[in-house]
Length: 632
Image (cartoon, rainbow, N blue to C red):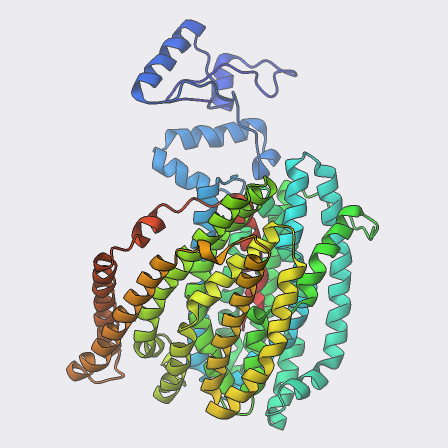
């Protein structure tokens, strides 16, 4: 491997069959070095003096992915061309090469960049739907139509391409048991695809009964439209499932490019369907676009990448396979357990069905609220599970507890501060993002209220996933899913009571309370089992962050409500931008002053965060891809 222009001697990978000349070797393998031993030693000493490591490295890099299918000379020319470019350009080209095996940092950067880009396109999608269809009965039916596909996807694919499948597959790869990994992949994808197809057919037949039971507040035409849209959307779940499992294999091999762009294509095709066929098909054009997007994005993009590297797939119904049985045993709690994290949307839609546009406005608020959850959850979740699992498996239980508590502290403290800004900026943010076309100022005001109250639970949503991962790291999926299922069932009367007491906004209160109970149940169980002590949390630092957030949020909200409207007419685009600017500047200044006055260590702790490890990137990336089609 070259070290600042010098490399160690090594055997060419094809030296057993042919012996190229030094000139040919240089052309076909850019890192080859043919210096005499004495000169090579001098070169290494110069590199050591310049700060480079003189440690011997591998004499060649293996060809991966697409490069395996290229002639050897062609692959060498590609690397030779990269070497002739500037170092920055070379790194960029390698970063976006489909066959590039990413490091932990580059994989995290790629996945988080594409997740953020997917969220941006997702909000272009939401903004288009708000513009074209507003917040009326049609959008209510469209959002409601995702409920049964969501449920089917959750029940069948809940653990398939995330924690359980990835953990088994990557374990086989680490143990050099590639044949076992391929067999497991073949059995899981064959058997569960057959189950998914059968489930889709049954769901298609039972759709009218499900819609009438779930959305009893819908009128007759709304029920008919919801049934029609649901039946369009159901087949897409097959492609999401297959694409999710295949993408999990690619991610396990550290090949991230194709899976990362799957959700982007999905969102683009929803918008494309509405733009092209919206006039002729109405809101059904969005559903058809979602189905096409599920084929082109999560499914086709991953399958193309898998064909290039080879997955060894052979149709197999070998349900006696030990790895498949292990997968089933680990996945059943995740499939049958009903977490409020997923069920919250279903419950909100059920109760909001009695009002025209209420489902749509709740959905708009919840989708915008999901952005900081995705950012904070992705940033912490990608780093958490591999570290948790390694420490637990090594019986370093004190470090395990400390790492979990530190992760929860970081995400909760950062979420407190973000909540302050979100609550203060609720109205101008919603107005700027959504109000255009058929989405009116009255819709903005109602949606902003829902977003305001949803924002209060950001820390709860972000932190509960870390406690769940602590259980997964210990090899326990049953305990957390049993606990959250009980919490979900116990929360149903609360949703009903608050809805009838306060109306639709009461559903936001119930959502916050339910996810809070979810978090505290998981934290208590970890503490009770002496796995992660609640006393190990940095309560003092959390208090400083909460106090700072309270002060910054109050000042920012006062500035946004009282200063900007006196300058410009409330509700105009200029007023929205002005309000957001004033709120953001006030929030930033108040947050910095508050952390400084309280001598908080949060900024230092956030900067010292460890980089993510690639197995967790694979798990979260797969979950992101699998979940791309489960949101309207």
